Length: 361
Ligand code: PEP
Ligand code: MN
Image 1 (spheres, rainbow, N blue to C red):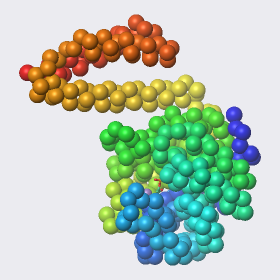
Image 2 (image 1 turned 90 degrees about the vertical axis):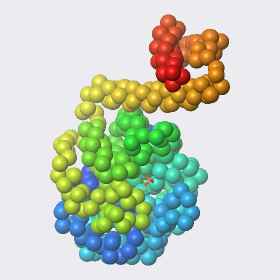
Image 3 (image 1 turned 120 degrees about the horizontal axis):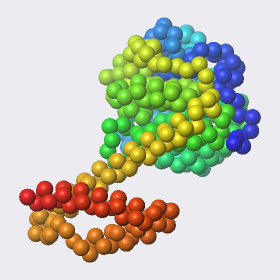
């Protein structure tokens, strides 16, 4: 149960921000030009589904030379968004200087990005600066699927006296190729919600999806798990976007998508039957097992090609014996039944041999 200090549920900091309806945060991945920012915001305002406008001001890019954001200049555009549309604003901060500038331009909510959350030194530096402010902070999951790191960041920010906190689920870096840009690993946000009942969770289906194709399903899945809101990247002209072009929706596409989502009236995860939460975890584990099996079969094919080229027999008794004995010991140390391990390995090995035989012939 929660050891966070007085953490406030989203509806209470929403009252503070004078926000009342469904929690949809939208806006471009990056603030690129004044026109792009204002046009996007005005359109979003017109559809009236969104109360908070997001925009990246400083962009963490994997390689130098990509668009790195407009910095302070763009904060002026966001201030105009506030006056012209009455939307609240939120931006990503990654350094103490970012926080100071965001506050100077009256940004309403800050968020901390996935790469920053992975670094406790950076988080502590942000926490130390946040001691001087009373501003809501949303904390994305770290890029690596480490719940302790996510929790640690939340605790550090809360330790600085911030009690308007939300977590953002944006998925985790995939080591294997998948259709999604980031794998959701739903069991992790579920576990976080179990640890901190009060902590609001916002889904970020844009960064999980990576293209517009899966955004709706992933958004709905989050709502089905009683997430408290969604953050969805929206650009007036996605094709021309300087970052994350493939995953951004136009304001009108966002309006359609949100209109077709099913929102639940209750927003506490405790109302989801415990068995549903556990099933969610099983689904996720099964998917990961299947991904790993597919990965194993890829390697099997590579070895098959090697054997063919070098005229080596498919079945190697000593290798098989070694597989059985090492896996038996390891599985047993994890509490798995030895007969069960053997049976599973036999099935996998049989399939592997069959694949290699096919290759050979
Ligand atoms: C973003 O929201 O634009 C962003 C950079 O996200 P993340 O930190 O999740 O990669
Ligand atoms: Mn983005």
